[in-house]
Length: 134
Image (cartoon, rainbow, N blue to C red):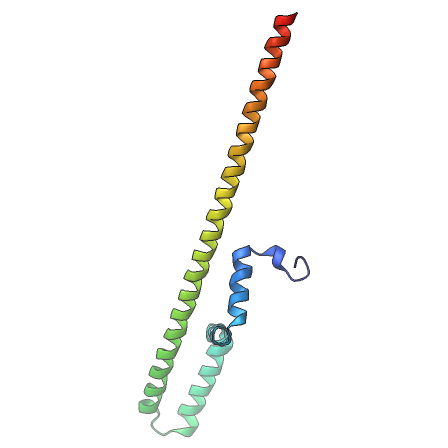
């Protein structure tokens, strides 16, 4: 792991989330569909297919076109919700990770502050003792 696989450039929660998604076939398929459905090639393919269909293949395309578009909207809205759920799960994972890291940093800072305080007191004590001896 490191520079070659790109993990050092991403938050550990991102790396864990991607690994989890890569291990599940259904999630990989949903990711690919969502990625394509949210792209301009998806728009272009639909514009061309619907234009060709309406102009060349059906004399009255509206009833069938309405059915197809409605069914497609149902599936696409499902993929939008899948994407939203995925984003919410990722945000929770990242928030949990950040909380743990912040708590660790707070503990480390507290320990360092206590150690500095103890050293300062010891130094002060020694200076007073050295001053009293002279």
